[in-house]
Image (tube, rainbow over all chains, first blue to last red; front, side, top):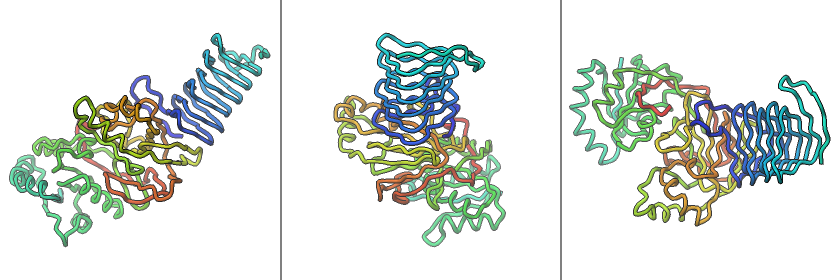
Length: 126
Length: 287
């Protein structure tokens, strides 16, 4: 998908509204905010924000991500991943830093990679 | 050489043009950008005049008229694959293209901008055989800046009448977007005045897709002021995508309009054209 560079500060480049349904590969170079339903694949070279109303059934790749909605699929994050208190993740996570807020749900395995991308340890959680 | 196409349409534009014509010609002469001038008539169409300009090896065509006149000129030029720079003097103070390109309705200011000759090469959107500078509106719900009336009640009443419609788009051959929309636009360029997000850069080789999903009656009332700005992105929950190619899959027969004029119906494909246009723009352009 295309890239836009001159957005108002703080505005995500791609926004999937709450009542929008997407099927396929949502691939972009900018920030992505998802409040709707996505099935397929999500990939961005920047930040991904999955809102509380979002339902994602897709493999996810991003630099940093915050998840407040439901995600079913494998998640690969280069930097930090935050699962918010309303967030629910079912799948395997690879990231450098992981934070799960109280109330956040995570079912799967998490692999913590260093900033260089090398895997340092692997833990299983339920 | 400058080649001027005068195309006043409608009673008001014609009267205005008759009033300013003398002053316009004088100002053009004073700024040394005078040239051949032709007026569009019933038998002398814009397309014929563009042919004539190309035949005369004009390097610059200045359109003096409405947004529709400019669109017709650009379509004629692109079809001829002519290397001609286009300038615009709007006879309509509400011209959206004039605002996008930073060209005011004030004649002297507009001539100054033409004389300044700040030329930018711009993308064109293409829907079927038709090229456009601004945007395609999907469906029958057009959103323009409106006077909200007392406490915005006028605009709320107006927006309550709009009927949502299902829409299905396929972007860049990668993913399908489905929703029930109150409004949807595919933007090459637009006026961003009063808008939350800057969209429609006609130099980025991308189309911006803006979708406002169905709103409840209460939401329409709550966001009536945002809706009255004409910027769908001012309403929370609007969706934004970017693509080079947008296939409008359905619903079938969904009207697709540019500047309020329906050009085709879904299913149709909107792309960033390979053809580009050189335009004289002002400092206050929207990109």
